[in-house]
Amino acid sequence: MRNSLSMTVGSGGGQINGSDDRVIQAGIDYLNALGGGTLKLLPGTYHLNNAIYLRSNIQIEGSGNETVLVKNPSVSTPLAIDSDWYDSDVTLTKGNGFEVGYGVCLRAKTPHDGGSNVIKRTIVAKEGNRLWLDKSLEKNFWADHEAQISTLFPILSGEHICDVEIRDLALDGNRSNNERLDGNYAGCIFMQDCERITIDHVEARNYNGDGISWQICHDVTVTNCRSLNNADLGLHPGSGSQRPIMQDNYLAGNRLGLFFCWGVKHGTAENNQILNNCQYGISVGHRDTDNIIRHNRIEGSGEVGITFRNEPNEGRSPHRNLVENNRIANSGPDKSGIGIDIQGETQSITIRENQIAETRKGGEHIGVQIGEKTSNILLEKNEFSGVAVGVRDLRDE
Image 1 (tube, rainbow, N blue to C red):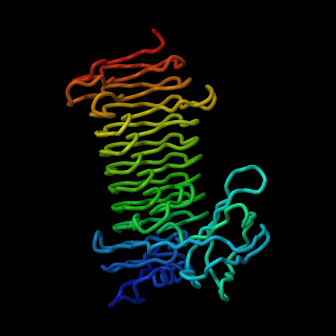
Image 2 (cartoon, one colour):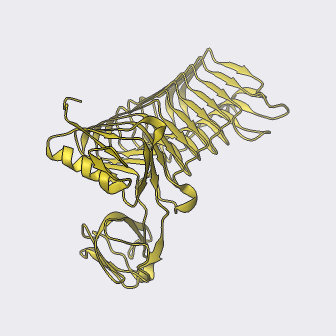
Image 3 (cartoon, rainbow, N blue to C red):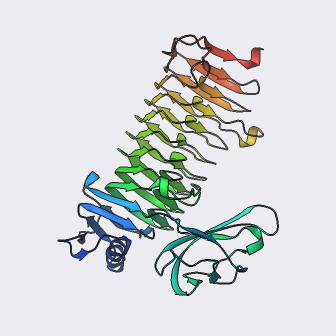
């Protein structure tokens, strides 16, 4: 970071003292007003009723596992009356658990097409069961379309910012006491439309959603991080993200380890340990092209080690990706599973010098499965051990 200005926040002994989201946000906003700098979080546990909103040119730095940011338990209630897209207030059936300064998420079925409306806001005023929010709703939330409000939010959040560093923190989503919120809107860390973001030595755990998610963000670097026991995705390079670098991370116990969303291009996933994730180790799909997956250890995936998803047509398929020198072991259930599964009309995938192993006995595991509509799939110098079939090429069946 260019800026030398720094300040400290802590429960005692900091330049700003306290143990909740307000003191951290105050430090960030102060530095932001002066052009940026480093906010150092002293050891302690900070309990959050709202997201920490990051700003450009800010480095937030903790004391490793001694600095823990915990999301407080969520509460939810239906809306009592309709609110329209131009409103900035909502009326609840019950106002308990909703206070000024709290972060909230509103969700409802759309009145028009059967989809979902989801927005995040902050409460800025309250009178009885009526809340005023920091921005207008921008979407319709109608009581007869299951509109509800919940105290759900990311732990760290950034939108339309750049040149941010997040280091040496533990983030706990308090999963058992919070409702699920999709990784397109939240996570222990959630970034939207950002550039040049560095996340290093951060533990993101127990979020009822994603660990670390970034949407339409370019040049995001995630290194030496741990994403553990999150309900959804360990790392989620989101739609349209260019040049993500994910190195030396430990992703375990999530529903899925590393998920390339839509149109993720020129990314690198290297030297990661991706262990015991419930569904896939790594998933690559819709227009995810020109990515490198190299030198990773992917073991104990519940279904498939690495999957190239079955997209509807060639134009939406993941092309020109390299899978090189990974160890992929014990993929799927005890009796079946696939190390690498290439589906749909995927083209130009290179699978080179990987070790694909199965140490469990008596199963019908497959090392690499090549879908019948794929093309230009190159397999070179891969090693197979313990699998029933090294390569199953459905184009030949």
